[in-house]
Structures are given as structure tokens and as C-alpha cells.
Amino acid sequence: MRNQLVAEILYNVADILEIKGEDFKPRAYRKAANTVETLSEDIEQVYKQGRLMELPGVGEHIAEKIAEIIETGKLKSYEKLKKSVPFDYEELMNVQGMGPKRIKYLYDKLKIKNIKDLEKASKQGKIRNLEGFGEKSEQNILESIEFAKIGRGRMLLGFALPTAEEIIKNIKMADKSAKVDYAGSLRRKKETIGDIDILVSCRNPKKLMEYFTSMKDVAKVLGKGDTKSTVLLKNGLQVDIRVVPDESYGSALQYFTGSKLHNIAVRSIAIKKGYKLSEYGLFSGKKRIAGKTEKEIYSKLGMSYIEPEIRENEGEIELAIKNKLPKLIPYNSIRGDLQMHTKFSDGSNTVEEMALEAKKLGYEYIAITDHTGNLKVAGAMSVKEIPKYMKEIEKAEKKTGLRILKGCEVNILTDGSLDMPDKVLKDFDIVLAGVHSGFKEDIKTMTNRIINAMENEHVDVIAHPTGRILQKREGYKVDLDKLFDFSKKTKTYLEIDAYPSRLDLDSVNTRRAIQSGCSLFIDTDAHSTEQLRYMNLGVATARRGWAESKDILNTLPWIRLKKRIK
Ligand code: DGT
Ligand code: CA
Ligand code: CA
Ligand code: ZN
Image (cartoon, rainbow, N blue to C red; front, side):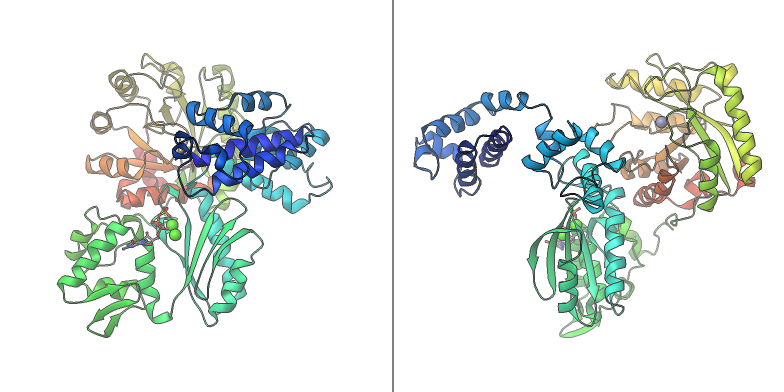
């Protein structure tokens, strides 16, 4: 079905014509767009049967345009129209809350041409003073930009999680009696989230629904009932909420946490035992024998409790029956962050600022790991600057009392060499090596590049081993089994980079690496003090990869860690 595409282009044509001051044509285009958008049959079918002009609002002129879109997937006159305005109309329209009028107004007032300009103006507080905007709409714009940047559809875990936590906090404030949890993929900590599922038990469900559907961040109420509602937030996230009776809370939480495959397998175990498991409880005949907590459900089914992160039917059920599940690495058990950047390369804070924030977060130690070498894009540090960098780190260590490893992140070049000589690298406490260019290489070349780096005695860890950026860039081709082999052989750690769009290694490869006997460590790759808070996203990834504390180097206290590095 091309209906959506056709409608979208026609709507866009209408918008731009309106911006250009036309008054009749935009209405005609919108009417036709609306017809196509809400058409129950396939527009291609209508076109092939020569019935386009029978559609309401479609005359000869617009029928021709529709035909062109169906034939070519594009519309030439629209491409031309786009170029006739001084701003990137499509890009700006991706930001929720932007319409043709606002786009034109923002251009006229502030010369905003694209998302980058819009973000800059919002951050500088220039939008709030405009007529029809305020501090709140400025904030909304910033949130929506984040979402527009990562594309429509699924949202990164790191961005959805704070939203869900905020909603839960507010619900608890509005109703002190409420028990509230997020469920679904969010509770399983999948790296991207389709929608947020929230579960509640409370005294007054109706009032709660009222509150939920009128929260300040709601853009649109998509459904509203007495115990179940769905809203679309201004940042583009959809949130489902359900209220269940307290005696069913655990079974509902289990059901709505999923995954579907896990649930199906658990339900079949219930059936084998002569029970019935549903979101309402675990039943023996008509009698509910469990339901209030998840723990009692798993226990009545003869299983140890299964953490949400590994409920994917990937072997966890069999092990739960044998009481042999791994003890997953706990949240907040990381003792130090081992990758972060400062103003010496592309970070936005000083060494001391990063150290102070890390101390606030309760760490015992950190590593400052600015980019070194020829990496121009990352504002890499030259050899000349290194003495000053080392001094700066020592100063911050004295001042904060935090142990600070002198680290760096070097680039693995296309021939597998590093862009810093050994005589420089040997002075660092910790060296991360990563691929930052030449991503398109074939699998053999890429694998050899990285193995070469591992074989360098100064390299302690391979940073973001696959190079993928969620929703933006696939990882490069690399033979991970071989890397795991060499990681063991050369005692090179592999990184779980906790940055929201990286999470690299991902959970699947984390599990493979651990099974191969590799050691890992988790860090944030923070480029500002703010980003240090992402650590638990990396822990979540490790948990989804079945990691225990012993698999992760930086769960160690300083006295044991310092013996392992170097
Ligand atoms: P998402 O939202 O795409 O990131 O993924 P989920 O896992 O959050 O999926 P969602 O929101 O469609 O549903 C939430 C949970 O509800 C899901 O993890 C398991 C449960 N669920 C949904 N549909 C079914 C179903 O047809 N059968 C079973 N057993 N469970 C279901
Ligand atoms: Ca969901
Ligand atoms: Ca859902
Ligand atoms: Zn960087």
C-alpha cells in the first residue's frame, strides 16, 4: 500500500504552498491527501483501474500527481517546491509540534533553517520569548528534537526510561495508595522500546485514569477506559496503562513484562502441572493459588525467580527449574567508570569537573580516556598536549581524592596499526583502542585490524567492539568469535559502552563473549558530566547478556582493579 506515502507528499505540498502564501491550492491538496489517507482500499488498485478521479477531492490535476507518485515513488513538483523555501521543511516537520506556520515564523524571526538551528536557539533560550511560545514549548521542542533525531518508531531505552520513571513518580504522587511498575520491553531493558507499558493497582482506578490522560506531557489521548488507557506523549512516545486488582498484580506484571515467547513457555509449564496461568493469576481449577507477586507464581511453578532482563526464552526457564540461574550483576555495582572524555578532546567538561561528578555518583576510581592521535573529528589530543593532560589528571586526583587512571582512546588505523607510537602509549595506565574510520572494510581485514591492536602490549581494551550506532549505523563486519579468542589470548578486555545509542557490545554478543571466557568492562564513554549517569544502561545490557559480577572488571574495588590493569 502506497496510501500513506501518497497522502504524506500531498500534505507536504499543501504545507509549502501555504507557506508561500497560496490560499486556494493548499486546501485542494489537503482534501485529496485526506481522502487518500483514509481510503480503505489500495490507491494503486484505484489508479490501475482508472478510478482516481472518482475519489472525493481528486480532479485531473491532482490525479496526475498521484499517478506520478505511484509510478516513481516521488513527485517532481514537490522536490522543486522544497528547494524554493530557505529552510529544510521535511526535517523541521519531523519535530513534533512544528507546522508550516511555526516553521515560517521561526525562520522569519530567528532564521531557523534546520533542526540544528532549532536546537541551538532552544538551548540558548531564544524561543521562549517569541509570541506564542514559552519556556514549556521550548522544553518540548528540545525533547522532540531528540526523538526526531533517532527517527520515528522505536525509542532508545536510555531516553524512554527517564520518561517512564517520571510518569511513575507523578502517579505515585497523585495517588499515595498506588502500586506502580513499568512492564513490557522497558522492564526487560531492551535497547529500543516500542511503547511504555505501565501497570497499577490502586483504590480509585477511575480517578487515576483521569489523572493519567490529562498529564501535562500528553499530546493526544488514544484510548480511555475505566481500567485501561493509551496516550501519545509530546515526545512521540506512546504509553499504555492498565489498572488491575491487587490480588492479580504479580500475574499481570508477569504477563505484561513478557517477552511473549517467555510467557508462552511459562504457561505451558503451568498447563503441564494441571494449572492455568493468565494475567489474572495462577489457577488450580477455580481457585487462585498465586497472583499477588511474581515470585509466588514462579515458585508455585517450581522455578526460581527469573529476572525480567533474561525473560526471552533463551534457556532461562530450564535453568530456573534446576535452580541454576546465574546471579546477574546488580545495578549500581560498578565501582568506577573507565571511559570518559574531557575538553582535552571532544568532551564538554574539564578533568576536574568529570572527577567531581564521578565522586558524587559514588565511584572509587575513574579513567580519563581522551582521544589521542589523528582523529580530527573528535578533536583528538596531540602528543604535545599529553604532559599537560597527565598533570591535569594528577591535580584532579589530589583535589578530589578519587583514583584517576591516566587513559586514552587511540584509533585502530586501516592497516591495523595505532595512531600513537608505543613510546607514548606506555606512559598511560589504561589504553582503549577503537575503530573510528574505515568502517566499510571486508570482514577479514576488519578482524585482522582489531586483532593487531589486541596484540599490542599497551592496549588494555577494545572500545565499542562492533561500532554499531543504534538506529543510525550498522556495526562493521567482524568475526567476533575470532575476537573473543584473541581477547582471551592477549588478555584484552572488551567494552560494553553504555552510551544510549551504542550499547556495544550488545546483550547477545555479551553473552557470547562471556561464554567464550572473555572479560568485559562497562563504561559510559561520557562526553559530559551529564552522561556519566548512563552507567546502568550498560549494566542492563550486561544483565541481558547473563553477566555476573565476576565477568565485569570494574565491579572490583580499587585495590584489586589496579593489579588487573597494567
Ligand atoms: P515493545 O513495546 O515493542 O518494545 O515490546 P513489548 O514486549 O513491550 O510488547 P507490547 O508492548 O506489545 O506488550 C507488552 C507485553 O504484553 C509483552 O511483552 C507480553 C505481553 N503480551 C502482549 N501481547 C501478548 C500476547 O499475544 N500473548 C502473550 N502471552 N503476551 C502478550
Ligand atoms: Ca511495550
Ligand atoms: Ca504496549
Ligand atoms: Zn569521543
